[in-house]
Amino acid sequence: MARKMLDDGELSQTNQEGSQYDFDLFVIGAGSGGVRAARFSANYGAKVGICELPFHPISSEVIGGVGGTCVIRGCVPKKILVYGATFGGEIEDARNYGWEVNEKLDFNWKKLLQKKTDEIMRLNGIYKRLLSNAGVKLLEGEGKILGPNAVQVTQLDGTKMSYSVKHILIATGSRAQRLNIPGQELAITSDEALSLDDLPKRAVVFGGGYIAVEFASIWRGLGATVDLYYRRELPLRGFDDEMRAVVARNMEVRGINLHPQTNLTELIKTDNGIKVITDRGEELVADVVLFATGRLPNSKRLNLEAVGVELDKTGAVKVDEYSRTNIPSIWAVGDVTNRMNLTPVALMEGTCFAKTVFGGESSKPDYSNIPCAVFCIPPLSVVGLSEEKAIEQANGDVLVFTSSFNPMKNTISGRQEKTIMKLVVDAETDKVLGASMCGPDAPEIMQGIAVALKCGATKAQFDSTVGIHPSTAEEFVTMRSVSRRVTAGGKPKTNM
Image 1 (cartoon, rainbow, N blue to C red):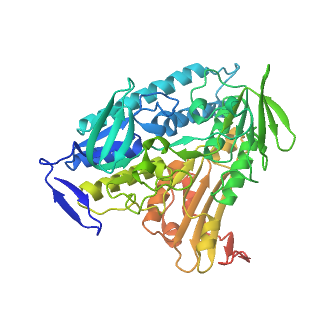
Image 2 (image 1 turned 60 degrees about the vertical axis):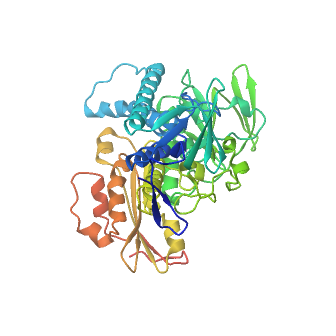
Image 3 (image 1 turned 180 degrees about the vertical axis):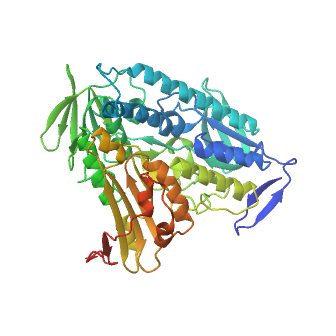
């Protein structure tokens, strides 16, 4: 039985067999959120169609691929390159562990690139099979909304197919944007950065977010000279300030040249490469210039304004807490809504949509205590509130516990790079409000910490948990001394 959510939040059943529609649900966009919503809706008995642009690693308005940004040109290929970039330092560190690495190390970029491409092709096929096994009809082409209950798919050859649908779900994600300066066409975005024919010897990255930090780490780890420019004093705006400083310091130690509070003003093609000019009058020449200056919702070509779907000033689709737009039959999940732009969040939103519309269970996404990671080298991972956010939201004092140490592995290898860990605690309730870590294996450790925070763990419960020794993770249950106590107004008190 197909179901729909009524305005009052209750659910009523509709006889699917006698439906006047071609599909109970049609999804535009087969990325993580769209595929999840389509599969789960089909499992509830809905007749589901989904469309996606033809496959290509580098996206545009007319090419994309089943699997979306994360699988094809985002998280997965990025993490593969991070793994590749990490090995250089690991091999060097191995010398002090007795490994006789005598010859000069050579790196084959094209081999790694081919392995990356093979993997995203494999995952693209898996996503297609997931849809097929769930009984979802996949159409290749560009989707457009014709009305509250009508969609059109334009195939590569120009053929247009129209369908009547009961519910429409927009899951088209987002796309990288370019900096509007003279010579902008000489730069690349993260799409192209994941598919470069040759590894750059000299790279410039402009941006202070996680994409900028990650690509700077990747290219430096693979041996390139890297200059990272960003507008603010520290990279990674929105993350805990103390951790932002740690990431910046680690990048410098690993040889990345940082240029804070600096803008690029012009790019000029020369015989030697791309000349980069900044607002400080600096000039340098690079093989590659990467713009990592944010992403914009992929909503332009959907015909949303004509249908009356409300958008915000960035082009993001406005939705309520159930992912429903102002048009009752049209919904949206994932980055196109610009809520919390993470792949697992899109999966959560897609799951909640399916439960609400076809599963008979009103379900809205819960955005509290969502863990995330920045895959710089070494990585940063966080869950819950930063120290700054905790102080901003606190009614009383906030306790901050920190631990900074040289990991055991580094004491032998000789690498001078500290791991930093942090807990933020409500002084009155003893509840742990946030946790963060910068160091090896941080994302793996933080996933477990996220479960504890989701369950409302207190600092006393952390303290009573027996640690695994010797491990880095045990520091989270052995931090006994308060580093600082801060009032709701943000004024530190005497350390305890």
